[in-house]
Length: 139
Image (tube, rainbow, N blue to C red; front, side, top):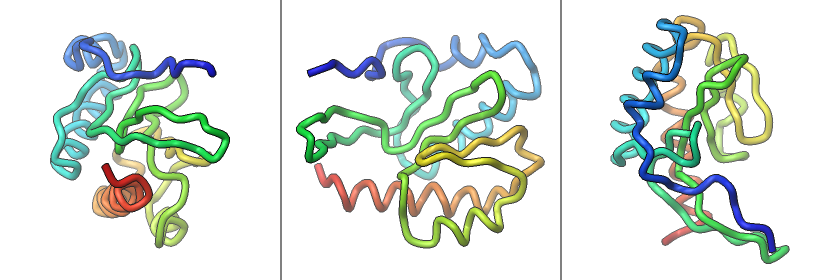
């Protein structure tokens, strides 16, 4: 069975933020990290070299594959800030329709800049996502 590459590390969140060359992107990421810290109740930790995660849960799929993942996370990718959420949860589509300018894939929310979105809607998305993950994977 393949080992997960993205695991919690001792890498520095401060160093990660400092590595973001675009000042506006760096400030937006710091603001989102502060928000995720407040909403999750967990301190930010690096997962691998590029994901800031909050909390941890253990998952196991029917295939037998499993591992640990953060309850919610963030990465600064080349094309967008990525927020990692549960793939499905109550009101997800309704909330996304109210969020503002964004793109999505199964469990990723892509944002260009904070001004493009409604922060209280992002807060609701994060809270409902964390609740769903805790329901699916109680530790």
